[in-house]
Length: 449
Image (cartoon, helix red, strand yellow):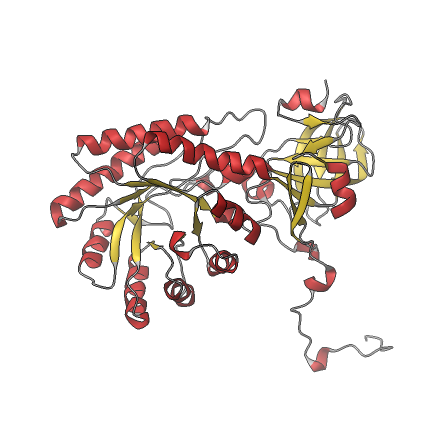
């Protein structure tokens, strides 16, 4: 059995037995751009965007799909998302600045975050960002004051904690009551915030938002969230007369990282969500709100591949064979953080039999820098190329310079064309912000005591 057969993915393999992504031979990509290298399949990104938009267009009268930029964001991706008609969810001044620098329309930006600084909020207000997603009462008071100072009247959506626990990794759960995110419904904080906003001429309250977690494979938690938010909206209408025009259900749909994971198709999930919103609002005699969804991972995740060069190989007889690559936890921290399980192939030996089982080790000076355990592979050799699959989300965006490793380049591939969208970091760039006080400068020829 070879790599393409074992992993049951839509591989393309050329006559040389090389992995091909977006019409590009990854061996040639490595020669041109070096490794580690993030490779993004443009057509798959676009197809994932369209699955959301096209499905919802058939199911629901008023909706918007907003890309969660924390998964992966560059100026080039902003341009692609704009072409596909998506809005943008940002969670920091840096993400907002990236979008603005790319020319992304500010009115289609939604600014999230549980601890937005005065500077970040002011930047958003001055650029007339479309919506501020208010996370807590303290932020609400701060925003009111800044709106007065800047003479703006922002549109706001409140993030709520519905008390729903999605079945995912504990660090990926965000909808339960005990969470750093959002205003709780059960203890009255959310209703208190609504009353404050309705009494404040500086704000335009439009609706409510909830995000219950990430890498979710079930629809039931979303359906439960819809019921809870619907009941809250009805209660707010009864107590204040306010009709919410927007219902934002966040993102969080899971993707297939390995052969044991079976996510539901995006159209099927969208169908059930749309049906549940219609049924819930109908039962409450509530006008259908605008429906917003915030996918990130499910748009970019499976479109990404990280390419490494294999270096040293260490075999401990009867125990394990370690195959080391020229990257690791600095460019993919998800294994160390979330115990994520990936699949990989030797990209220049796609037709070779998977006759060995190895553990892929990174080059960081950490025992825990292991990318994949017990991976079936073709016989590995130094200089071979290892392609780790489904690395489009939370790899580049969470990459670090640990061990002073430069961050990899990012290349966008489509129809046999490769375009660099992030240049590889250089050693000079690693030290460009370092400053040496005069008293610590090392004079040539001196010897330390």
